[in-house]
Length: 99
Image (cartoon, rainbow, N blue to C red; front, side):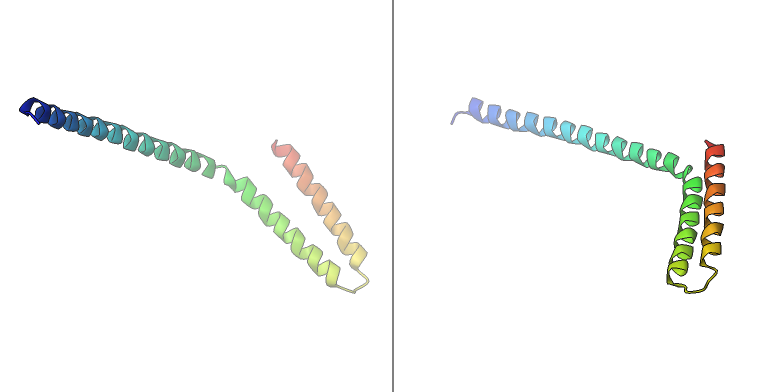
């Protein structure tokens, strides 16, 4: 191998290293920006969870009541079911009013 060929190979390796470093930096920055964007979206969605958490809590209460009624043998069962219907109607009215 002559000296010109050795210099050419070394220059090609140096250029490839520089290009790879640049591409790597750009890719890293792009990933950081995407992560930041997702983080900001998650934060903005987090502020709207209050009504959803309240609704989930109401549904959990209703499920507990239904489980209790289903396993209870007392004669007041129909009164309890009617109370749940009234409560359900009130929740529907509140939900429609907030829309």
